[in-house]
Amino acid sequence: MTRGTTPTLTFSFGDDVDMSLIDYAELTIRQQLKNKLIKRLAKDVENNAFYVYLSEKETLSLESGDCQIQVKIKLTDGGIVASSIETLTVNEILNGGVML
Image (cartoon, rainbow, N blue to C red):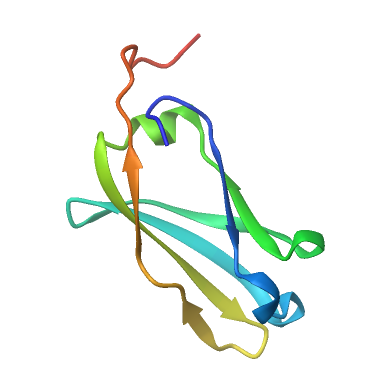
């Protein structure tokens, strides 16, 4: 992911996950032991996946370097599950301002 861009992040858990049992999911992005972004994910039942759009302002709030990401899911029965914590690299951008 590159700072100052507007990526759509997609998360797939394969056929092992029954999407009808999921109420909603959220993504946490953490850098330097601080949660920088917490965003609700959109559910794509047809592709058995979740996705989230990040704005230019949101990606500019991240520093270049590694960040940790994790998806947390609330099930329809009230249960909570979480993915493993993964590392994602945030790349620098030369023009770090918001485009007008």
